[in-house]
Length: 161
Length: 161
DNA sequence: AACATTGTACAGTTTAAACTGTACGAAAAA
DNA sequence: TTTTTCGTACAGTTTAAACTGTACAATGTT
Figure 1 (tube, rainbow over the protein chains, first blue to last red):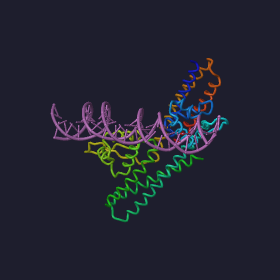
Figure 2 (spheres, rainbow over the protein chains, first blue to last red):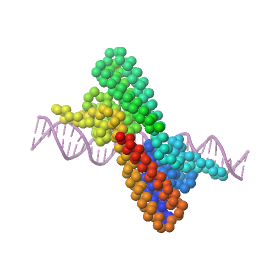
Figure 3 (cartoon, rainbow over the protein chains, first blue to last red):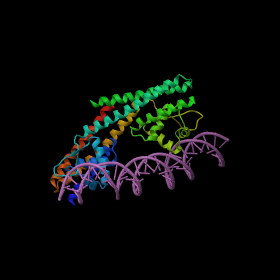
Figure 4 (cartoon, chains in turn yellow, blue, green, purple):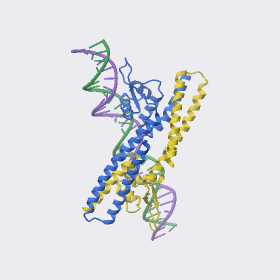
């Protein structure tokens, strides 16, 4: 009963911590899994995670892979143990920030490339006669949108330092 | 046909721009709506938006309300017109950043309050005899998690300047 | 070599979110 | 006042995402 008490507290922490982690664009399950791993005493196997969170092993496999891709968890080797053991990485702020900032920079650049392409198309179509007001408005706003993306990009790049 | 050409370009812009907007935690439809409004020549009614995006009026009503709550669009008054007219606000970077940063600060504080509460519970349970190692580990990690939230909070507060 | 165990791909199912249509209160028009 | 028109609440439906169970390839064990 006292034992269950710490389990209760552990669960409460997991729930709250997971909510914050979700804000970094992780799914609820990924967030819950990371939070649980972070509180665990030792590296866990897929089966242990599955048991602890009450989700299928397949789910755990996919979730842990996502976390691993984001460099949030680490695969640990222990001799004599065949199963994969995972543990949460520890520098929370640094980990989540860098992964998040990189995501933004990445996405922003993709968008900007696409928008530059469209701007080019628009310049081409200029040479033919089209409704002038509408086209000018479009060009003007497109410039603003591209400028917006430039600002986003440099903003997140500066954060990287 | 040439007319359709600018419409094509407009749609392309909407699609790409919307992807960026979604990153600020807006739903795909909200993002698409804002992007469309931003390119529009004039303030639009719910019916016009509904027609343009091919979605129901109810959807538009809900989406525009969300955008309005985030201060991303403005209700415009025009005499003689009964219907609500909405237009996109123009300072893209400032608008999205402030709304996003506020969201983070807000959420982070809620989490931290909840975690402080849990920390208190944990201190209470200390006085009874429980598995020592497990409890100490929990206390230690909880401290780290709360510290993480403090860092997040001050990070976003500094961005506000 | 035969067998057992592990992680993951895939198809199918369940669950949650997005979206729609009808209905209704509020405000303007007749 | 009666009638029309607007925005939105709500219940029901559709669509998308999350999740599971089975099967299989890869690796380790006997």
